[in-house]
Length: 101
Image (cartoon, rainbow, N blue to C red; front, side, top):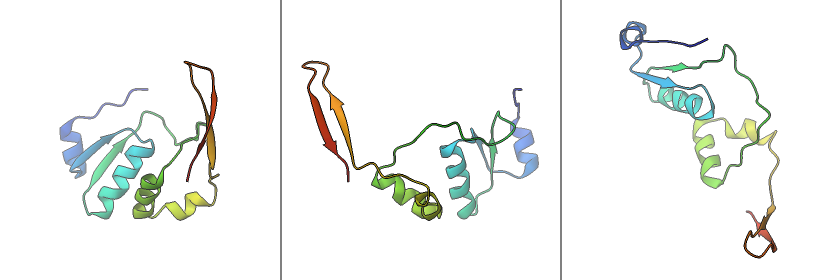
């Protein structure tokens, strides 16, 4: 199902901004605009929100942005901190530990 919207439809709905995509970035942008008093319309092709099973890695700046949106404390309850990782060089096949934090 493809969604079509014209600028006239967005103007009739009273939105100032149309956001294409209801993923993490689209929803975060819509929430941030809402908190600033700016009306927006988030468009998503899917009929419902779903978890795709993929993981995301957030660095400190990402958590600060989520704190500003007021959702970080909720997300921290289900997050799993990554304390280190491994890197294998394609040149010499050496395995290196990479600390995070």
